[in-house]
Image (cartoon, rainbow, N blue to C red; front, side, top):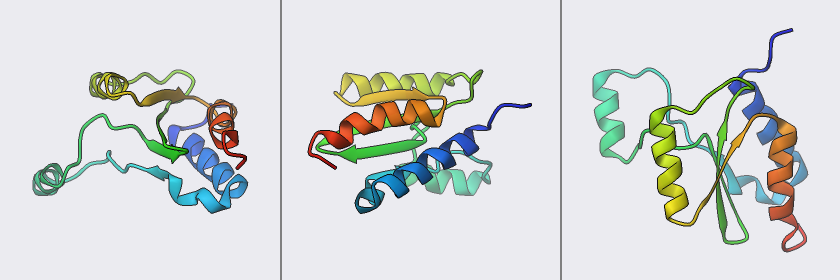
Length: 117
C-alpha cells in the first residue's frame, strides 16, 4: 500500500485541529505557496509578499508561532525550505517537519495546554 501524500497528511492534521480546537480554527492556517503559475501571476504574487520555501502551515497560539512543514515518510525539504527554516529559527520561531497526524498532535497538544485549551 502506498504511503500518504503530503496533501493528505496536511488535510488530516487540519481536520483534527479544527475538530479538537474549534475556537482556535483561525490560529492554524495554510500558506498556499506552491503550484504552477503563469509568469505574470508569479510576478504579482512575489510583489505582494509570497516567499519561496515558506512552510505549509502556521500555528499561532499562546504568543508562539510554529511553522509546520508537511512531508511524506521519504520526503525532503527543498533548498529554499531549508533557507526559510534557518531564517525562522534565527528569528526565534519554532519550525517542525511533520510526517504524520500523530507527529502533528505531539507538537500541537503541549502548545494548546499551556493555557488549558
